[in-house]
Length: 85
Image (cartoon, rainbow, N blue to C red; front, top):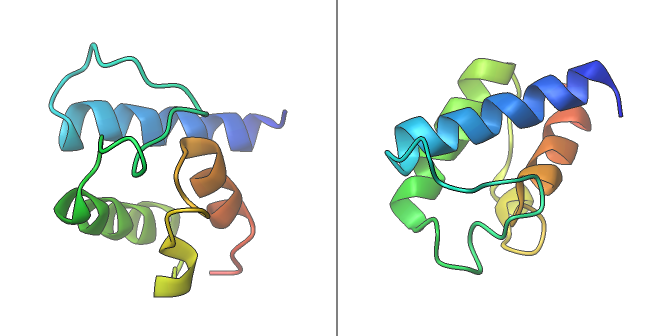
C-alpha cells in the first residue's frame, strides 16, 4: 500500500468521523459501508463530495458517486487516485 493512498484513506476517515458524523470515536475502516449501511445520507454525501474536490483538487462527476462505486473509503480513495484532476 502506498503512503499516498494511506494518507488519503486516513484523511477521509478523519473527515468523516469529525466533520460529517461528529463522532471521533466512530469505528470506520477502509471497507466500512458508508451509503448502503445508512451511515451517510444524501446531505452527508454532498458534504463529502465538496470536501474531496476541495482537499484533493479533483473533479468528481455524478456517475462516480453511484452507491456501488463509492460505498467505502477504499472505493472513494480509488476514485481520487484515479482522477486526473
